[in-house]
Length: 252
Image 1 (cartoon, rainbow, N blue to C red):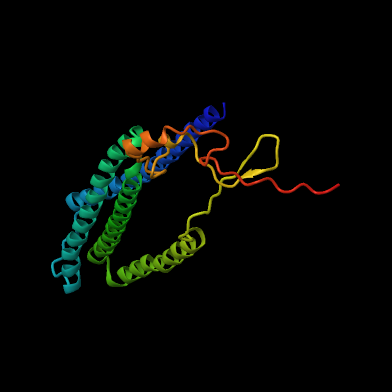
Image 2: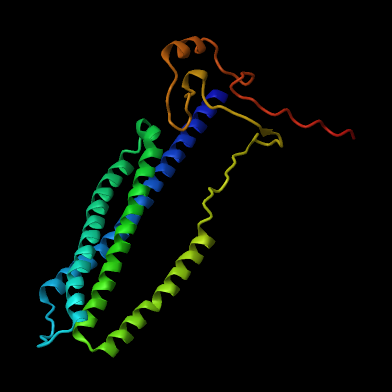
């Protein structure tokens, strides 16, 4: 009966671990899903501005207007390139991440850490590409203002645009310092005997043949070791279940 209960606990713990792995992958996939709309908007508006934007014809354009007109196409190309990269990587990451979430079996648990690290690293690259795209869009807009507007209006519009950058940097830095401490939350597991106050100091679930060498990776022992250890069955006095002795009873 005790062995059956331990095997049931083993199965429940493994199911919970698989659920956590699947949830972690789904959260990373949802991040990529939020990046696709922003990249799509940047691509659409940038392409439209390149094709349909008409500049005012000047008989005698200044040197600044000629320079800003050339820079406009450069910055729009940068915005297009960054947003296209974000769209392509996010689309592939969503497709592969959903496949990993469906196929989150014990055979793939040993590669779960590498898969999560790869998805997280590529998402940082997507964020950087979106940032570059936004910078390109803002710079192209300022260049368009300098081409179409007069000098004083162009300076005022540029000043109003750049005043938001210090506030943006301050908001991002303070939020990152407050919410991202860079350390994982510690976790602990305590089991108590039913109807008693004694706690289990250390426990292993199942017989010796079912105990993997790598608990998280799910890597099993070799057959020779399994056959040698399967001869001794586990019971309540086995070394597989190490319990802390109960505290001494107080004299009445």
